[in-house]
Amino acid sequence: MTVVPFLIVAAAAGTASLLARHLRGWSTAIAVFGLLVMIGTSGAMGSGAAIEIGGLRLVASDWLRLFAILGSVVGLLLVLVDVTAVHEPDAPGVIVLGTGASVLALSLSDPGVAVVAATAGGLAAVLVAAPIGAAARAAIVGTRELRALAVAGTLSILATAWLARPLGDLVSVPAVFGAAYLAFAAAVAIRFGAIPFHLWAARVADAAPGVALPLLMAWGPAAFAAVALVWIDQSVAPLVLPFDVERGLIAAVGAVSVLLGLLAAWIQDDLEHVVGYSIVADAGFVVLGLAVLDPAIWEPARTWLLIFVVARSAFAAWVVALDGGFATRRLPELGGWARRAPILAVGLVGIGIATIGWPGLTAWEARASIASLSLPSALATVVMIAPLAGLAIYGRILLIGLAPQSEAIRAGRGERPSWPVPRPSRPVVGLSSTERVVERIGHALSAALDVFWVIPAAARANRMGLASLVVGTLAVLSLLVSAGGLDVPAAARAVPEVVEPGPGQPTEPNEGPVESLPPGAVPSGPVNEEPGASLDEEPAGSAPAASDAVSFEPVDSGGPDGASGSPAP
Image (cartoon, rainbow, N blue to C red; front, side, top):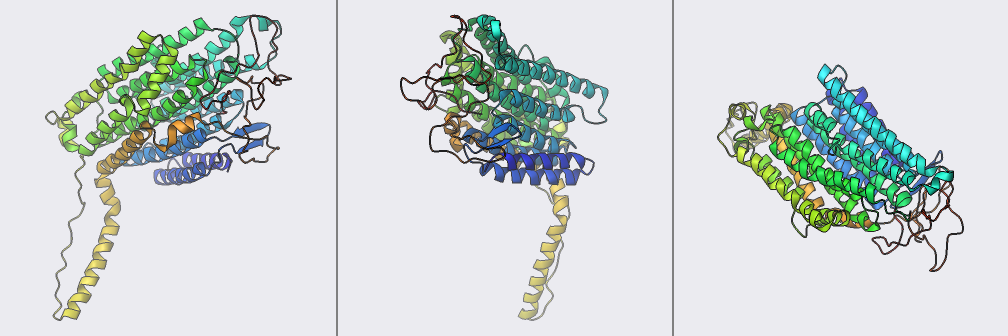
């Protein structure tokens, strides 16, 4: 199956959920149903299945399928946390649409069109940052987010268009290619809110609903970064140019984001800001990956992207559940929270383990590979061990949770289960054994009906306990992905094998190693050719080699599977 059914369901369910936003129950039900169907359709995607629609080529891959499955599952759990904790009117529909837009961007083989799709998905998320009828402050925050999206989208579109056009005499100017490379990397840094582009992200973390933060700051930007990795590997890496200055600037932004993001997360008192700066710190490793022009970066970078989005979604959901139960997200007011929310305490420990990890764990090894490939050895060691500072961040939250209970905690709901009505008493009055048996059967049926009618009220009375169970599920999922479960490393290194489809006709995976490259892209290595063979002609739209300073000959650099070239998104 191609990616088309997934996209159709996401578009239909997300739009219908937003149209029904004033009927919150129906809006949430539509989003939940859509996400369930999206889980099924994403699992049915065939690796390498492609389709061409209106000149646009959509290609599925193992990594895209896993991204779609995890995005749908995490989106479903976030909607459930939202409905049990805060119930934001626009969040369910936007989560569905944002997930669909991210998968669409990753399936497009043309990077220029893919960045447009990724930017459009971010524009849909503005609805939760500045909803209809929002106060002036929220509207200002939405405007800043819109500005960041517009700048990032413009930079990336210009970069992809610049290298896809005939360059003429500019082909002899290496700065042209370096500027395009740096522009796309800067666009990714802006989308993530990496330091020094973090001001808009900090404001969004303060004003946007917590359940929407994973979409605004993690899933959408992660799809954008995955498109950038493909474009850099296909259009920049094959150039025989050092790009030392550009790579140094990109690596500096990534390293600073890791170090200062962790410091900022540690000193914050508002938990939403802790989540926001934690995302900035983890996104620093994604930016570092863009500074590497080596196929060896492919597997660790895409592995880290999946671990990053799932773990940070779990942390954001944890904050939403805590805020929904105790009506505050400020740490000084949360003294003793762990005493009344032990499930959330265990969930926080799991999220911390999944995020920090240890040497040998997939998450740790992915970060270590990115740092060692992008930075000098001494600085790489510092950045590699910097995530251990997360122990101080999570430890501070847990210590406050074990302190004496504050007024907000005593007045909150807590996780202790409760039943909203007393259990009715039905004495047995029958004289014979047959009468008593009949009475007991009737009482059992009556008790079942009593429970059935009280379920909605019981769910409202135990909202925090239900939200905590959902967060616990997210914590387990983040631990699984962080440990390399669900074949995350294998999906990250897999190369889709596809054949050219006809217009509107899907294709099934081909058994031969035929690789898909976007129109106008220059392959980073020989594709499907015998040793010693050469490419007779260049792809349409690629820049001709016109000087000794720039060479467009394929470079056999060796991919992670032992074959050169890079997979499609």
